[in-house]
Image 1 (cartoon, rainbow, N blue to C red):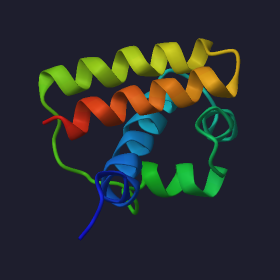
Image 2: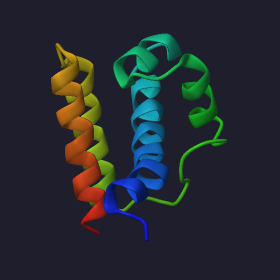
Image 3: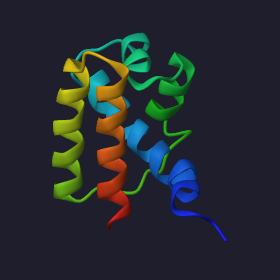
Image 4: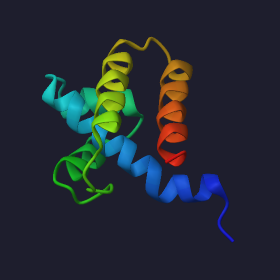
Length: 97
């Protein structure tokens, strides 16, 4: 039996990171800066950008808006706790669907 957070760790979190990395890069952050914001390596960001990691399913309009808003908040976040809350909020919204 897989627990909800175990499923999230393997499937939901990579999708969140991939989408946020793509949006942050599109908004002008470097791969290094995006990686620092997401708490991952620049190599992981590169893999997300090249769709080697993270789910590539299309997003609904609501999910796209959620990720766009989250990316703006992520770029402005001042500490790791704020970033963690933001990621958890995205995870909860995606898992609820």
